[in-house]
Length: 335
Image (cartoon, rainbow, N blue to C red):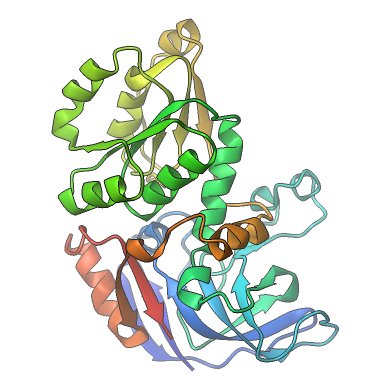
């Protein structure tokens, strides 16, 4: 089969690979559509659990090609979305409903081969039938599942005003999720004009360039009940408490470099009753994400900037490494 392989740090290439065979409890999936995620760029740079060589790709939709031994409940030809987290199911965190914190954590496209390839092998329990949901929508189930987990981590949002730093794919999903969860108004911050325009089109009360933050602060002197970031920039994290109201919640969602540090004032967090909340990956909530997508409660088509082929992926990643194409929002891969 043809696959994109990260051979080593900053070296992506398409090459012939052996087609995998499903073992007991596993399924061979013929890939249809995959989404490119910021995590993929981190992996290519050698961060975030990177192990080379690796076939990346963890936002995945395809059709069941073959069933391994002892697989039931799925049929050949059925379209499925793939949950990338491979958990043991028995450790303390799995039993607490946190498979993304499994003591034996693995993830398709992160620690084991993923779906930027013609075929993928995945545990049968990780596959969710999507019915007639178009693959270009169903492929957003994994990132939307991550957003739903972030919203669950925040707790009740009804009646709050929120501020989101970053209007890329995750920021725009967060924006919509906050509104669905009951936020009265959501504001966005992003340096790219097209992304600000899209944030407004998707429901933002207003979208600001970072240079206009003093005006935002002046217009909202008491701050926001929820301040979230989807940037992966430590300097944004450092600024977030100053935009939170007393008793407000700060959500760190972006994937930051492992070595990054952000200076926060413990006294400010204590004196203003602020909550600083992290959100990592997703639990077993892909079915809920698919339900939102099926009902059209979350708009994802406007997020897609381009659809590329497998053969075009090395150039795509090289361009990103060189700082080109940063204005694009979501790239999908048709396989």
